[in-house]
Length: 569
Image (cartoon, rainbow, N blue to C red; front, top):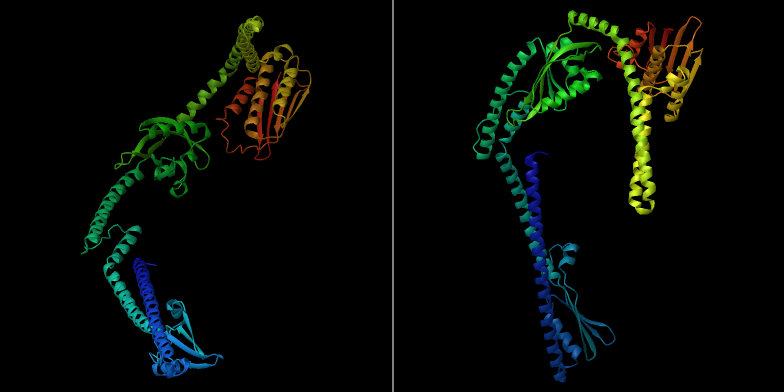
């Protein structure tokens, strides 16, 4: 329903309410007038008949009262607003007033109208000699008269109502005629035609709308031309240019970005910037966004991004905040990325990797030595201090039992805290360097560690199988195998969601120590996993390579993961 019909409907409703109210007021006034007229006519009639009755009684020579009254009524005829009945003592009807001839040819008013205007019926009775007189009120004449007036009012009102609606509808159409070109212009602008303009209107309000609309069109055209020039520059630059909103979603993607990463504009626009980032660099990117959204610029930081095909690309990245010129608020950021994945970079990376591998064994040896030393110092030094604290606190508690319960309570709290420190210290020592590895050997240490894991994760079934005599293994081999199993177990607990783990460790007749670590977890697609960036897997590989052993990782999605290791003893 358009605006014209809505306004016309509103005016129609208001007119209906007005006419209904007026009709109700007129009917209410008519009812009061009829009530007053009927009551007045009834009083006059009764006074007249009472006079006749009294006069007849005072003059007996006239005859019997009922006969005198009958003759009088017959000469009187119809009395307005009253029906008169004369009965004998035996109940026979002697006289009934004739019907009114007033508006006799008119159609009777509707029943609802008569019921609405009819006053309450009133009956007066007079007992006379040899008869009985009954007078009833009858307002039909007044009601017919009111209905006649009401019909004229109705037809006049209906004619006025129809003519007024036609006039209002025409006037609304005339007044609202400028809306049609306005709506048409807005639709065209919504479809991308920014050259459309509105004509001048005579009405000041519409003239103001037209002027503001035309100014808006000029401004939009100017901004669009400027944006087109900037977009052309951004599209033709060799660097990948991206624009992100405050939710880190990509809103602009140039041709160079498409060339570097392989995503078309349709594929990437509206997606999160993290689609180009591996998990390793997500925190770095998040921090960069936080800095840029605070108004800071970031220049030429080297990072890594992920292509559409899953490959990694090394890039130099710069960020600048994107500021709304009107509100002067940051609404996003502009990011430029330059591909620096050249062969020289790859060769240097390989050389550095080889150099790192040469020092792996030495570094691991130093780390284990430091762990052993740190564990020993914790046990010897901190352990003694904690024990001394417990002894002092116990002495204070014993002496304060009778003197001060509050001091005793505080001393017991110190003892409890010391016990917790002691337990925590032993847990740290065990993580740094399992003492059982030096005292009991690899097999017993693994059994003890597996039991600890099994208690902590009761829903996980861990099966350990050890074959062969492992007591003759050297310290370096023991600690590396222990660390590999520990790292593999941590990976399962964090990522695998496995229900069963099998650990098979065997020393074969050829002198090779073989480890088969298998879980039934969710596995992974090795083609999509950059193992060089997975430090857990990379650390295990480096340990095995430093021992001149072989390392193999087998995994399929939803089929679990298996690690196969073989190390010469």
